[in-house]
Amino acid sequence: MGGILRPDAPRQGRVTTFSWTMDLTDNEEDEALQELERLRQEHRDLDAAIDALERMAVSDRLQIQRLKKRKLGLRDRISYLEDLLTPDIIA
Image 1 (cartoon, rainbow, N blue to C red):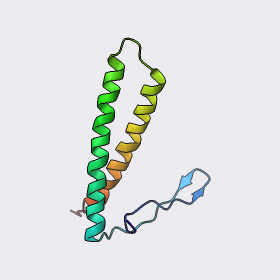
Image 2 (cartoon, rainbow, N blue to C red):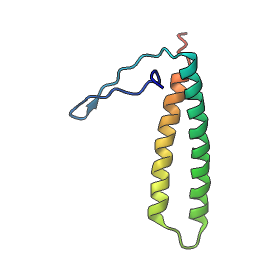
Image 3 (cartoon, rainbow, N blue to C red):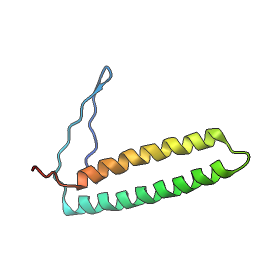
């Protein structure tokens, strides 16, 4: 997935800069779509797991927090891929 755009983030203090190109080949677009679907499924699975754990009388709060953190990371990656695959429309 050579052309899938990943942030190139050299850090200077707390400021992060990004540089990438928005030109995807058909193959890269297909790979991004496949990854997007996989991430969406994992996000749904985590949501179900979190719900099940929260309904338990004795639940592991630390495990729930870890799952929620993972879910947020997935949401960020999903948003990134959706933005990547959605063409910019200048009105």
